[in-house]
Length: 216
Image (cartoon, rainbow, N blue to C red; front, side, top):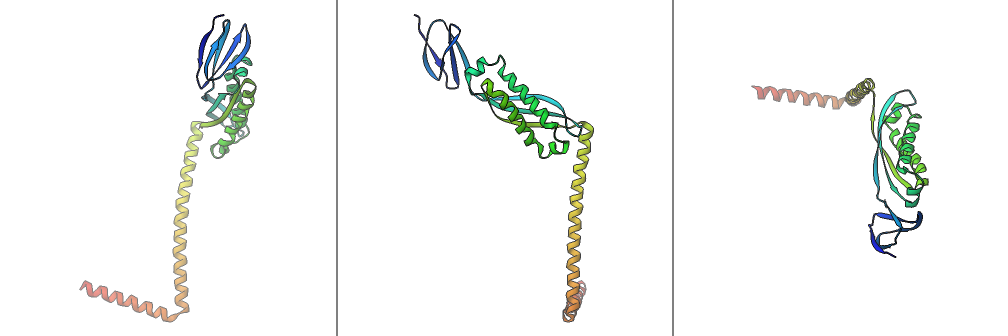
């Protein structure tokens, strides 16, 4: 019987089929290879997969263009090879559906502010559930871009500008209120203590006379 050696790298698992039946799963190292044996190499490393841009309608009827990505790896090489002809496609489709279902429950304001994490968690959950039977573990999903329609994008830009102007006006009003409060407190103090008022008057007169003497 002819025997040769095969090498399995650290990031691989090799499925050895003899006469069409799975005989063993080979881990990293050197292994003998028997005759009539078919070898299938499975890459166990993590993969970053980007989802094609999705046109999705939010709960308040706004059409968004969303891009996302997910990180997954093979956890069960036998299931990955035998359960589906396209296990990665199974996970990809589940992630797309998870994205759409999550966005359908949120309005556009939520998506743009706090909803990204919720959407990413929904994608991860849907993809992970679909991946488990086909030997895939989904570690995480990320929402990369949320693109508004042009007219809505312009409206949001104007809203942001208006908020910034409002903050500036509020700060100016606070400063003016603080100045008026300080003047009112000073006036009250002078009313309650006439001696301080006379002293302030003398100081002001002395300052004026000194200024006049310097000018001459």
